[in-house]
Image (cartoon, rainbow, N blue to C red; front, side, top):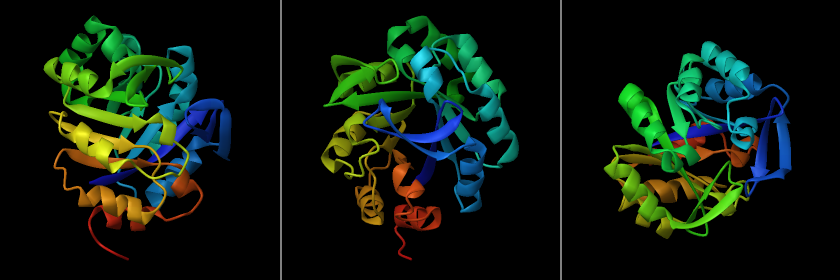
Length: 244
C-alpha cells in the first residue's frame, strides 16, 4: 500500500475541507507547490491533487498549479476535480498528471467514460464519493440514493479498474476510517482502489494495512499530515507493516 498526501486546491491555495463543505475550509499553503515539495521531500511516493474550484464549476480551473507541480516533483500525481468532458481529461493529462480522476461524469456520461478508457485506460481513475453509503456527485454537492457497491459493480463491468473511494462524512474530521465499510467495498472492486476519509493516526494506517485486502492499493491522507499528527515516512512505514 502507498500513502498519498492530499493537495486540495481552492482559490489557488492548498486547503482542507470538513465533510466536503466548501465554507468549512482551512488554508494550509498559499501556494500548492509548497505543499507538494514538502510531501515529496518527506518521502511521498505519489500525490493526490484535487482542483476543488474545478469540481464546483464543472471544468478544470487550476491547470497552472497542476502543471507546476507535475513539472517540479518526480513522483506520480493523480488529479481530479471538474473532469466532465473528454477535453478536460486530456487537459489534465497534458498538464502532467500521471492519472486523471473522473467523478460525477463517470456515471452520468456513458460516452465520456467509454472514450476516456479507450484513449487512456491505465491512466483513468474513477472517484466514488460516498455519504451515508450512498453516492454523492457534482463536487460532493449533490446526494443520490444509489448504493456505493452498485456504482462500483456497474463501473467495473464498463472496464474501470482503478478507483478512489472517499467517505465524505469522515473527510477532514480525523474520526478514523470505517474498516467494515472498506472491507465491504473491497469485496466488490474488480481492480484496485485507494481509500480516503478520516485517517488521523498511525494506528489508523496500521489497521488499513491489517485488513490484508489485496486490492486496497493505498490511502489518501490530508489533515493529519498538515497538522503534523505523523509524518509521511512514518505513515508509509505503517502501511508497509513496519513500526518506527
